[in-house]
Length: 399
Image (cartoon, rainbow, N blue to C red; front, side, top):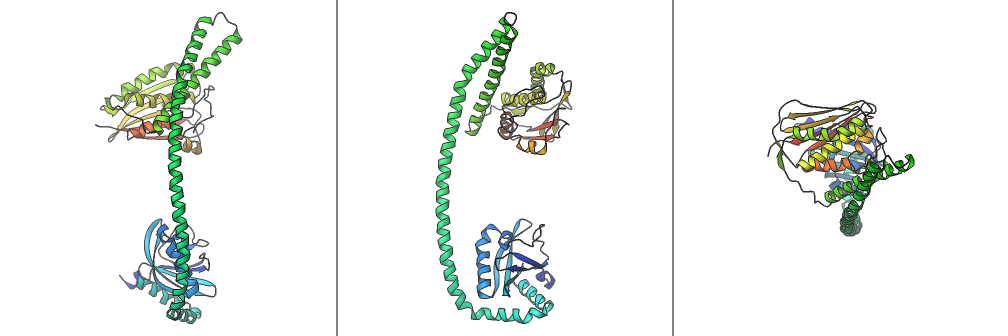
């Protein structure tokens, strides 16, 4: 290594607390953020924090330190550096380089440039040997204090581990209760919805308008609650790790066409056109057909729910390398970047009604993402307020 390379490094002036108050040299480009005002320990790797604190303490109490190896985070990557420094007039001069010789080279360069401080710095460096005994005694005090803090940290880790076990047990109990409650609710809700549909069909011409409205509300509410219960059951299975896939070779185009036909009734109510195009014939894809149909139904019904009247929903299927890409694009209300970021979390879109006042459980897209990831696939969303939304689902092709 050349002298110039050895001399590349870091020269900082810190206060006695380790806060950087001046940057003299920084050829290492430690971080894109300004160094001024940052604590030195914020720049080191987590494993080197304790060593850095020892270095600063020795520097303050002993007046000078050389040849300390500390891992500094340079552009967020841990990099071992050699450090040295001196204390002067209530400030700490800290020098870092990739080599031990580089520290001394930077130190000599600094002395040549800063003639006014040369004598004082040289005296501090020479005094290091005479202070060794004093430092040793202070190191023992520091060691005892660090040992005490370390014991406290071990006890805290032990307590945290205990709490984590208790939390896992409570979470499992919650999932079990959620599954049982949802399962027990599904049957009576199904009966309520079925009987309300029967009443609407058979009594629509007999009962008055207010009674018809009541039965309609009962039907729509029970339908929403049944959808919520089914989503809760899916969430319960997902959280407990019981989501099992039955992978079979499947023609995605036929699956999409069937799903378009099933959602045509909802689309027709809002005079929405659904267009499906396939750019090329794709080979069969190994998927759980029922679960991928659940994904398609959720995405397409959402597109209808949040689309304007007489708009168009475009669905495409194409191959990109070893993946099948399904895109569902609507001309609906769109979403902000913040809404997109929360979209796949449970209740991420809770409370936002559709353009026709349709309700949403807020759980569907969280389930969709889990199903897609269990297929080793990926789902992405692109949206802008007032300019619609596009969902893209990528599934691996092959056995």
